[in-house]
Length: 292
Image 1 (tube, helix red, strand yellow):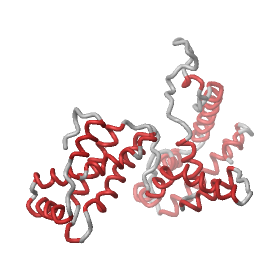
Image 2: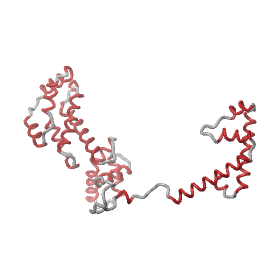
Image 3: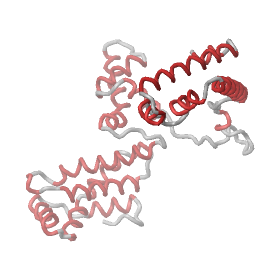
Image 4: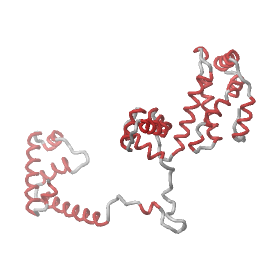
């Protein structure tokens, strides 16, 4: 059944006029599609069960999705069920198709509920579609016992009932509490009013912090340059090759280049660092803050 150009009432009327398949006819059509890829058999099977798809789609209207879109998703689930149905298993096609139709509709609802991805695991789906019902049931049972549940107790009980962590329940409550709002919407009816995005706190580096950081970096760079100048040429080369490059060289490779043992290069490096530390400590006591 093609859905383009039909509204939900038209599709419902046409679906109600479709034939009712008995088990034998249904099985014959399923074999014809599976074994011979008979598209007429597939079309007949799909058309006969569109009323089932439309009926299931109508149960999800409370989530605010257009009925036409829900029926479209239900029909996609129905077609997927027809493609994967194995008539040799001895079950009716309608019993098998229900799962695929429901899964297709649920995926669509969750994709379109919020710009923020609501969830994709089976437990998150169960929470999305059953949270309000489970909350109401638990509150009703508590009321019958003469108890009053606070929000923390209710969330814990829902988590146990659905089999998810408590933080998932808290997250889903936030998702279901309201619709998305654009940060570019104005805070008042005035078109020239401030947008909500302008009210967000800037978590970047503030001007004062940036100036202080740049000043401290420049000062530390000067200290290091002065300390390096206090080394001899070989010591400066070893420090530069070992510590001032993105990928420092090994003691062994430097030893081969300089004609020294690996241990001797290590000793020269340690002596150079000791000289630099004394130089830095002599320039300013504030350097201890950077060395710690």
